[in-house]
Image (cartoon, rainbow, N blue to C red):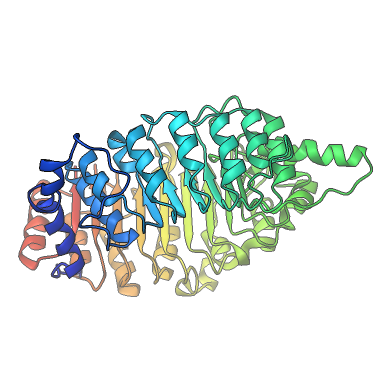
Amino acid sequence: MPQRGSPETLKHLSIVSMATHMDSVWAADYIHNYLDQYHFMYIIGPFDALPSHLIQELIEFLVQKRQLGRRHLHLMIHQHLESLHLGKCSSCMTDAVIKLVQIRCKKLKKLDLSRCNRLTSYAMSIALSYLPKLVYLNLYSTNCTDEVLGTIGAICVQLRDLNICKTHVTDKGIVSLCGGGNGIHGCKKLLSLDVSFNPRVTINGVKHALRQLPNLRQLLHNDVCDALVVLHEEAFKEGKTTTPYQLRSGTVNDFVVPVSFLEIVDLVCPNLEYIFVLNENLEGDVLQHISRLARLRNLSVSCTDSVVPFSEGLMSLLASVGRGLETLTLYGYDDIDVIAIGQSCPNLKTLTLESCHGFKLEHPQTVIPTALFGNLKSLRLGVEVISNTLEPTLPNSLKIVLEGGRQIENIEITNVEGFTDELFRQVLNQNSFQKLREFALIDCNNITGSSMFELLEGKNDLQRLVMLNCKEVMRRDYDQMMKVVASEHFQLDITWT
């Protein structure tokens, strides 16, 4: 049964009260007597005693209510702040406001200016020169330039996480940021650097970042894999052994990695935790190299053809790395065996099966379904229309996963004609989904509203229920569900079309 509504916390009620009376009480004196008449470096205002997280909650609440103004930021930006996320109020961010951050926030460690494209690169550069304690900086989709990166590389040397995606930087800026030129030390402590969607940052800039930043765990750019291959080849030609990099991800933006990288993946990036590959590459030496990635936690595989069968390619890989996997995503397969997945991946938490064409079950009678997928928290299943009605093993495959997933919190099922009321009741008899929070059915035309009512009556933590284009779930079912939610005071969001 979904959770019932509970009284709001005192903290939330206080935030609401301050936001409601912001102009009439808290900012009244400043607005009436000083705003636009004087320019203050410091203001002893009503919010100086509030810690960073409460200031952030107040800002976000005002943004949500579309009430945040420049005048409010004048009062809320104070000298004790250690964290400030202004990406959601980009319309209020001007050079004058960032100057207040520059002057007042000497203790700032985390700053988010994402999408604040009204800020000039000059104002950002000057402001950052006064913030040497930053460890997190988000400049996503701003007017960040090479000059700004030069300031960051010279001043913000404690930085651990930097996002400069969709900016105006070039290879020159990467050199200034990472050091190794013009006597600039650079941000050697960087662990995460996002330079994706920057067409003027080439493979040379990526190579420089890899050379100069030995602690990098994440480097996001389309040329990362190619750069690693080139660096490996350069070392080989010089008779040197490639020094392993500390990268945890072997792809960016869910791009499939090239075979040339897979052939050396265990040599250059032995600590990889995420990789996206093609099923056709899961054979021979490439399969052996990927199988040596002992720390692999997240695996995505796309099947563009069936040259390499599921049982030979993917299952051979899962036999080696499956016990460590927490996330598995498969695209386009026509011979998925969920029993084999469950047996090979006992610690799996997220399973996504998209655009599937077919399933198979090897020796299902010898398997206890509830012994599989015991740690699964999220399931997404999407089936291709063309083969859906011709797939007899799909319902049983889905049943096995759902009956075993006693820890499951999120379920999304798309276009599964075999998901019927009878099947769902059989599942509910084995698994009450006590931890279920979100349940979504899309284009499932053999499930009715009665099954959804059984879910509402069950012992679960359901917070969101989605039923899109399910022909047997009628408008009257939706109306009745909304009445139940209202009468029982459930904290439940229901979407129906």
